[in-house]
Image (tube, rainbow, N blue to C red; front, side, top):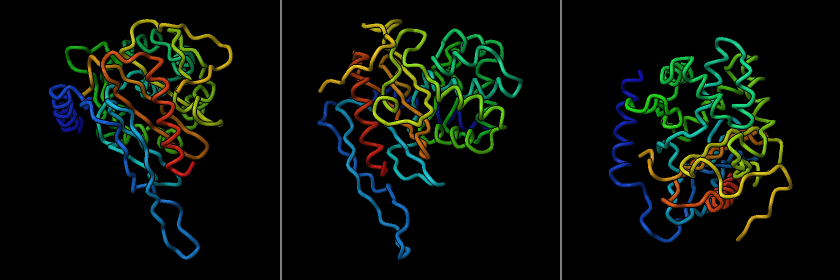
Length: 289
């Protein structure tokens, strides 16, 4: 199964790297999301809501919102990105097949990379992704390239597959795994263990209750301004290797919300933080939030 998936992902990744992403300098894209379908009216009709979502200039974006058994909003949901820390969801679920582990809490709550790397090494590296993709039915998720077996953040995934992971957590996952993973995601700390502020996107744009797993990569080993646990500041106005990624994913109320982005080369963390938060707010509003 994963052989075909790997070939498909490889082709997409190769094309993305060859084209250098989608930063073509055009004006911001306004996406008419005709797939945002409201609940059926009393007369049995299902009105289609056309919602404008502005994707920042030069940003390659994919998003999906799932509610009440269906996708209510989507934009390029099968586009493949490198996972960054979102893959920690699969690392955790794979470990929980064997049993709980004290490394899971900091890895899920505070995106602890050391914890993820230890579980990745201990449980077979890319085999983790292969096992969980087969179990959950993920079709666009694959291990990192063969030449980078230790780089769990270079795994490939799509917004559609991240929705499937959360649906699995809400439904088919063993109760112990569901309670452990979602319980930790509900308690996500503002500051990651690497001192990046992980309250962009869903935590910054949307009200609780939420349970989130964020992802960031390509912004250096430390942020320009280390995260602190004080008040959240007011906001100002291929796999994409070599360009930063910033992803926000989670469950908000009864919605699964996934927003994945590949940022232009050289984008600062603070700029990407603002852009992803604004995009998430627009996506949620367009989905009827």
